[in-house]
Image (cartoon, rainbow, N blue to C red; front, side, top):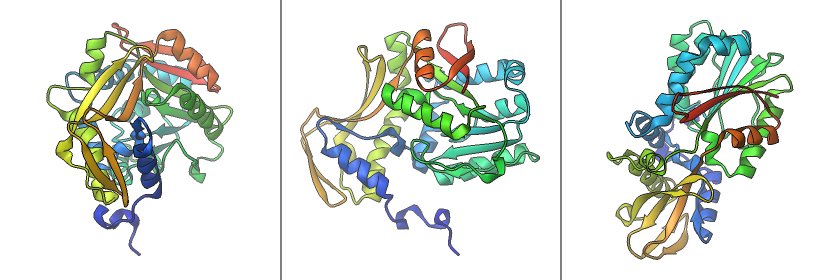
Length: 318
């Protein structure tokens, strides 16, 4: 039997959710698309490259916190929990946590199946005695955890300040869904990016090497490949903007000229200077972090931050 991941991407049927979200997003005024669709295999690879850029402080800052506070995590969390990571990606940060807390199992969840299975295989080699149970899916939707972790206490792991990609009401909904999924005795270790100097924030999302621009523009390539699109790749440029009123970085694809294109059999037009809003990354103050978690059904227990206060890791209980 041929498994889905064995089929070349060009021959796979379009994801109906991808088609729906893109067509609906391009039909809005202003146009906007959900950031989850950045992460095909190429998008996932580009994001991993972003995390190594000198301008992109969140990954190295959070990784340093995970390396430095392993003993604190072990004392606060205890051994024997099933670690459930939401949006696992390459799981580069995860080994620091797994080594620190001696978990009973690891369940990585990611929307990019190819990328997830590759990273899970690498982790299985590094942790040969640990059950690794990957789940391909969108953590914003309905999920079922593997039966193998039934009865185990759980630790949700949500690093990278991915919570910041959501509008506050959607972030609260997700935190509540995580609480239901993980159970009443669960804990959650979550990364949150702090509000800071505007120039530093913009640089992190508009790097000099153009990797973030390529990541943003890869969405156009994916639409063309998977949804029979004919968007001109040279018709758009990447823009990163700090929205002070909403305390967030916004990523946009801006039309450099009037455009007329098709996606999934439908016709769209854009004026020069019009944008597709592809991602928001909300930044939080210390009080905002706690308010968001409590609204989502979690009680903050411990917090770790770097000396500059750039980024926080918060441990919360259900």
